[in-house]
Structure formats: structure tokens, C-alpha cells
Image: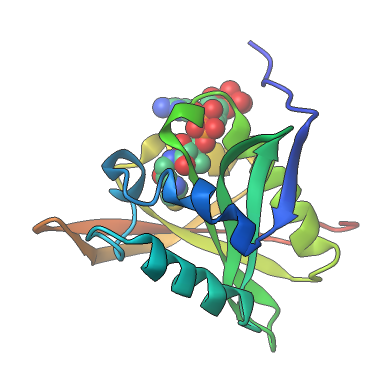
Length: 173
Ligand SMILES: CC(C)(COP(=O)(O)OP(=O)(O)OC[C@H]1O[C@@H](n2cnc3c(N)ncnc32)[C@H](O)[C@@H]1OP(=O)(O)O)[C@@H](O)C(=O)NCCC(=O)NCCS
């Protein structure tokens, strides 16, 4: 089956107006189990403060993902290390928007911004070793494996190995 196209998908620079959308997934275990931090319930005030910090940061670029008027989730480039122009990728989709090909579509748009206006050289991420579907998606997008970080995350009482993956800016991008 060909990949689903999402011509009306767009990334909007994060704004506090997107807070209600963010609150729709930030306390959802199905989404958050793949991340190490932020594992306890997050109030709207706490999330607003977190977004304000992101918005003021020189080392983060955060985007909200929409399909038309439908809010789907967030993606971002964090921990930007300007001397080598690399950054860590983050993506989270609302659970009711997963499995429809929005993840790869949003990541293609995010990488276009990374190589374009943000002018990065490399994007990396760490993904849970058992999150094989996310790894398959990153491979299809051109990421390669860089190594395994043993017992790197501790989530809900157990350690998890994390896999580091990265993509270097393609020639001509
Ligand atoms: C991970 C996430 C961004 C993926 O986005 P998504 O839109 O749900 O992705 P999809 O399920 O539509 O699949 C994306 C691609 O991966 C492929 N894929 C999915 N599961 C797969 C599997 N088990 N084996 C091989 N390929 C797989 C699909 O084939 C699809 O590729 P295609 O469009 O070429 O067919 C999203 O599910 C999410 O936000 N999950 C929760 C948070 C998270 O895990 N974030 C990433 C942490 S690193």
C-alpha cells in the first residue's frame, strides 16, 4: 500500500494558543510511556509554564502539527548545539491520530525546516529499544542507527535500553 499523503498537514510555530491541544495528549499514558521524563500528571498551569520556557529558548524550535483545523500533536528540535548545528528530534501525536501516516508526514516537514530555515547539519534522537515501529519509521525517513544506550531511561519502575538514531543533512538539501 502506498504511504498515505497528507497534503493539508502543516507545522505551525508553537504558540500558547495551542495549549488546549497539548493538554489532549500530555497526560495520556499511551503517548507518554515512550518518554523518560514528565511521567506524573501535568496540570494546565505547569504545561503553560513549560511552553513559555520552550518559546523563550534559543536552543529549541517547537511546532504544532495540524491537518486543516485538526490539532494532531507536537514536534520539535531540541537541545540545539549551534557550534555543530545538530539537534534532538521530538514528536508526539495524539493517540487518536496515530497509525494514519501523520508521523512521517510531520517529520518530513520538520526535517525540511531543519535543513532549510534553521540550517542544521544533523538531527538525532533516542527511541526506546522496544519501540520498533518508530524505529522502522525513522529508517524509512533516512535515519541510521548510531548505537545503544543501555538502561538509559527509567520509566514506571524499570530501566529501558535506548537506541540512538541520526540523519545528516543530505547533499543538496
Ligand atoms: C511514533 C509516531 C510519531 C508515529 O507516527 P504515526 O503517524 O502513528 O505512524 P504510522 O503508524 O502511521 O506509521 C509510520 C510508518 O512506519 C511504518 N511502521 C509502523 N509500524 C511498523 C512496524 N511495526 N514495522 C515496520 N514498519 C512500521 C509504517 O509502515 C509507516 O510507514 P508507511 O507510511 O511508509 O507505511 C506516533 O505513533 C507517536 O506519536 N507515538 C507516541 C509517541 C512516540 O512514540 N514518539 C516517538 C518517540 S521516539
